[in-house]
Length: 327
Image 1: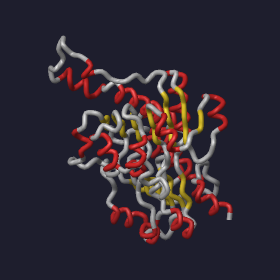
Image 2 (image 1 turned 135 degrees about the vertical axis):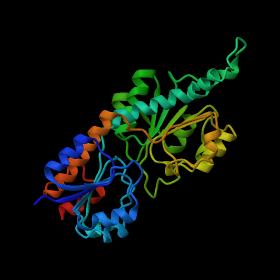
Image 3 (image 1 turned 120 degrees about the vertical axis):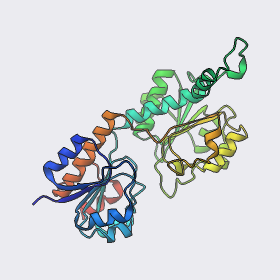
Image 4 (image 1 turned 30 degrees about the horizontal axis):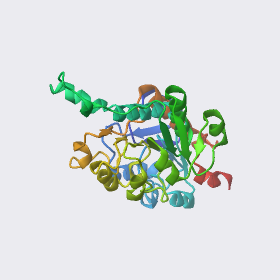
């Protein structure tokens, strides 16, 4: 008898077909998030759940007594209540590495867009403001040969560093929980304290996971340390930044601008002041959003799910839950 699973988000057809070969399944196929009460009903007889962003906590686990594994269709897993999952011996997996280059491409596009004011000047042309008298008021900043500071030198951070170093001749600084000797050797990357990196960098890219320690990791104090010409990029999680402090820094021109793919509230509140600022480029959390990458993520999530249900160690079992498998 095939294990029963629930697919709580839209997935590519190839992913659904693969799951169908190994499991009986039910699915949520709408674009809007699945209502939590409805999900509880569906999980009553399920051993596996494929999702992204669904809060996996004690409440959900109480409604899913047969659940063995939650397969996240994402790199981040801040939606996991790790302690609750450990106590119930529910495995959790994610989809790292397959999206590294795609997200790094997006980060470089944000850096270029903010520095050269691309969206702002696109509107300038479309609205008929371009004239022969244009002057320094529409100038931007160079990217090439500037200093790129990366906070969180994981796989994506290193992919960004590679592009900055070899594509734009940038000087690479980084701050991370651990030194990265390979990156230092391959990219000439130099380790800095958080404060040193903020002071020295022309572009600051935040790529830390969201944990209790990194919530509001960048706030008023950190923005005050940055150069007035600095550009801040966040493609990690919205809550790693104190958004109110960032808005103040942008309003007061403490920094030149920001490029954001993530926000504290998603979708963004229509009254968010960021929506009215010309020195900010905003994207709807699309870091991994290409057809090829989403297919690869989906297939990895499906393989993780099925491996766990068949007693095999999933390739991408999250670090904090590995003790469940080992005990």
